Length: 103
Image (tube, rainbow, N blue to C red; front, side, top):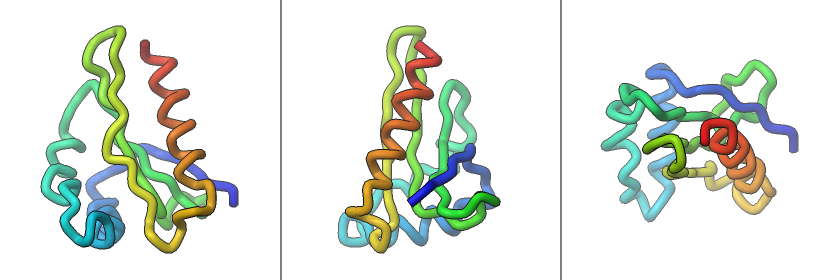
């Protein structure tokens, strides 16, 4: 499956919460921090989309830059119905390549 990426916005929060409700048996921390994440500088919150228009969110994650040598990857999530299809690997590779450009 081909996937597409873009930076997340506040409009994506409902879809992020919809994905998160099925993670960690509904006890995912991301819904509690996503607004804060979207406000932070020195990071990139990205969404993974199944459509070229980048409207149907199926995963997300974050790359946080701590200094010129350290990038932290966190919050990677894939919608349960899309897991075990290699999408998580594509999403992780996207984050790694983005981080490599920063450090």
